[in-house]
Image 1 (cartoon, rainbow over the protein chains, first blue to last red):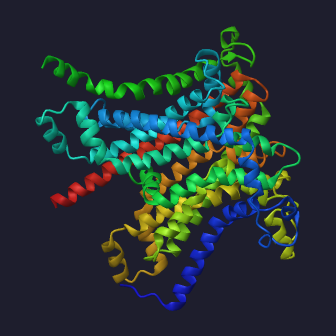
Image 2: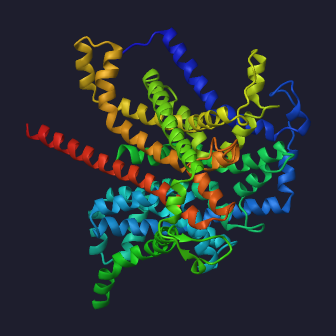
Length: 276
Length: 305
């Protein structure tokens, strides 16, 4: 075992703490600004010394339209996550267990679909949703796109979890007379819970954070919070305190997930790079 | 008994159907639609059915448009600079901080936070920090006696500003990946190098980096794909300006379609961006295939040895 000198260790942790500050600093700055009155934001003296106030948050929470946008974000995020998970794990199971197409074909197609930039979808989705599906300005239209853009990733990540489920487990259930649906829901699903959790976090985060498709598919009533933030910013007299409060409200759920499940998140994030 | 056999036979299709239907109607169909639309002269306000066939008109128009070329160069510059700097910083930090770390999971959690929060919020925070009057960056520069910098308002500084924000957000990705790769290197190779008297730098250059290469290449390609997809952060920070200095392709698609209302041209632009991303993705796929095949072969050889 290599020994590290005390000076080295000091330098080492100094660098590490400095990096943490770089990483967290901007987020903390947002938090501080969201707790400031307008006078304090424009005040030149100090970033850190001021009277904290919850006024910005209370003005968001008491504004019915802003609350509505938050609710829209939540609704779209939750429903699309549930739908994506149900459809995704069924498809992943079929692909793994019933050997449909070659594994390469499946992984290449899901990979390709995963990489489609959202900007590329704006034109056709706007046109199709408006003129053919009659789903524009409708939260369910938004949910449909989010399910579609999240499915490839969810199928892909759940595949690797399902592969690890011992086939003997399923065979035992089959011998006991379970039909394929019972095997799937009662035997396989409970085993891949960690995979489902990781997939759920990723899906919810993308739906909750998404902006450009929400911008083109929603109107005054169906707007989500990210869209509302962007519209606030184009005004001349930007109310930074309030907009930062909205930013915090949007940032809080992903931050909580990160602290609760950082291990699964890192697995999901690095899966593509470490394993093909 | 018969019904159960039918059920068994039909099961895979029943399981695939919901996801398949959604993907066909809400992803594959739109992409097909996009490809067709890119050959039509189509403007907002008229239904697609009324538009006229334009052949390659949209594409030739775009390729002859100097502002497209500028925007294309901005996109390429952004993607390459971001990937190169993030790789250098991320891998460099991993080498610097390579050792068992107490409380690593806490540090890792902190490092991934910037990637988890909404891009729109990232743009918001950086726009606030770059603010010329009360932004913390210029305030700090002034306090230290430097000139303040016109971050987002000068065409020369806007692209670097946007790049800095992306580096802040995504360097941790490379760092975490390369640290993981570094810590899983075969101990025997490093031990052998050490016994042969290789210095720290020699170990890094001749042993560690080559062994980490498979992971690093894929990490760089993944980052590059993401760099071509960036939209929100820049939309919020500069909206492509000043001039065209930060107008990356994805933003240009949005503006062509929903500001200029040229849907046909926007579709052609989208196809160009899609093609770039697909080429990188396919390259990445085959790289990992070849890599895994090689690893499997080496492993098999080693076992037969």
